[in-house]
Length: 214
Image (cartoon, rainbow, N blue to C red; front, side, top):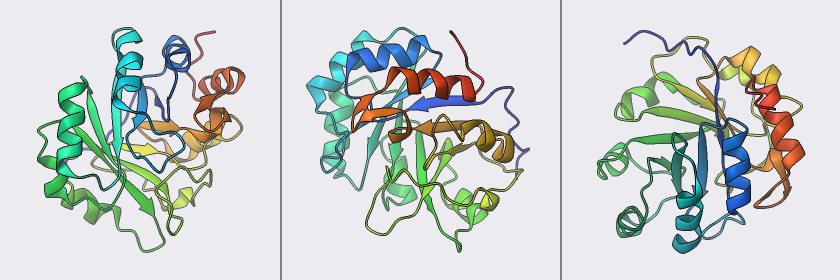
């Protein structure tokens, strides 16, 4: 097993972006990545034309992440042909073989339960660039707004860990202090309504995460 990842700062991904203005605000506040949801049942889902406008509006050095949930292979391929996505995020029950077939860097979301073995999952998803830890709620594929027990997260780990699930401006600083993740991922915790970001919440979240460009 390789050496633990010890980031010099905590990266931030703002997920569920549906509007250009929200993407630009996140980027200007110092977000490292924005997430675009390609999962039709989600209230934060975007279509390809909408996503293209957002991606084209972004300044350089902001990672664009496409989120898929148990998508058909052809759907992912068509999206990649249409959009210059930097990173894929698989948020369903996708196998390691499925995730690796697109020849694109990817992160695998893990819905945390008491029985979750992160060490074993890191071995299984050896080609993943990171594991994203989210809250398990039966029948819900992320976006729950509920935090899981952060004590489940090992303090040292062989692969970068992205902490998600119920993060908001009020708890992100404590989450980073306790878990010390490579990155944090927020969606609902910085929204005015589903799919619409709240500028004040975004600013407060970035301050709590130690990325204050104000």
